[in-house]
Each structure stands twice: as C-alpha cells, then as structure tokens.
Length: 195
Image 1 (tube, helix red, strand yellow):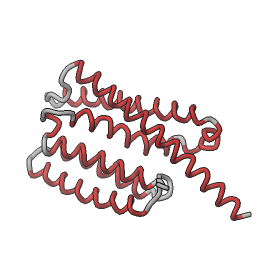
Image 2 (tube, helix red, strand yellow):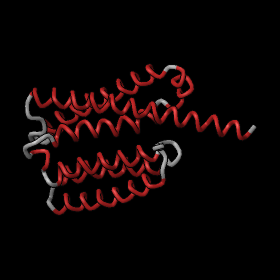
Image 3 (cartoon, rainbow, N blue to C red):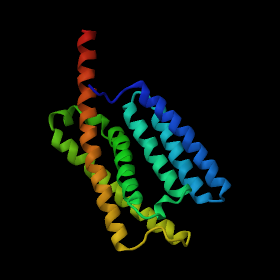
Image 4 (tube, rainbow, N blue to C red):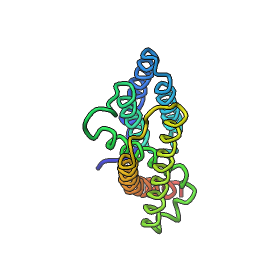
C-alpha cells in the first residue's frame, strides 16, 4: 500500500532542491533577476516545508519541489512560451502542490472535526486552493503591470489558468483527505499503544 510518508520522498525533495538551486544560478547567469527571485521564493518555501518534518507528509514536500521545478523550466528555459500545454499543466500542478501543503498546515487544528465530515474537508481545501489560484492570477497581472512585461496573454489565458488552478485544487483536496485519514489512523494507533 502506498503511503504519504516515505523517506524516499524526502530524499527526492532534497535532490529537487539541488536542481532548483542550479536553475536559480542559471537565471542569474541569464540576467533574469525576476525569474531568479521567483525561483528563490519557491526554494525557500520548499525548504521550509521540508524542514517542518512532522507537520507535513513527505509526499507533499516532494510534490511542492516538483511544482517549483516545473516553474523553473517555464521561466529559465522559457517553456511557458513554447507551443503546447506546459503553462496549463504547470498552473494545475503548482496549485495542486501549494494547496496540499498549505491546506494541510492551515486546517491541521480541525482534523478531528474533518475526519467526521470528509466532504466538508474536501470542499474547504478545494475552496482554499481555488482562492490561491485566483490570488496567483492577480499576482501575475500585477507583475506584468509593474514590470511592464507580458505575463498574462488575454482573457482566455486567464480563464484557462483559473480552470486549471481549480482542477489542481480539487485533486489536492482529494489527496489531502487520504493523507488526513492516514494521519488520524496513525494517531489512533499511537494513542492505543500508549495506553
């Protein structure tokens, strides 16, 4: 049976962090300071998630690093501007990974309630992720306005990104429910062994 906590995920996350560091250096060498700063933000956030050892399942750390690497490929190697669905896939996966990590951290204090109401948990985490996607779109628009660069194509691009963000948030909510159930059953086993 697959588990959300496995040492291999943590090792993979640290290896991904190394690759991300190389991407940051590549962005600096290219003179793409905005990209380097954005990637450094992902690197710092991923490091924090990885170092919060027991608060997040190791799978979530690994998936967040993968999302950071997808963004690195888009910015450093300009894959966002190539033909194909790279931008859409990255939007969905990034929202998915951020929603997993932050949703799990934000709603941890309510896990005992959510175990009794799984659909409420799924709806709450999905809504949280959709709002993250909306905030991301606002940040993209703001970055394009401030730096006088084209970050957002047109209205269709924005709507497509929001749809992909929503798909990522929904998938994150389902995976997060699985992790919640796994964590709560492990907690029950630990409590029973203490007695």
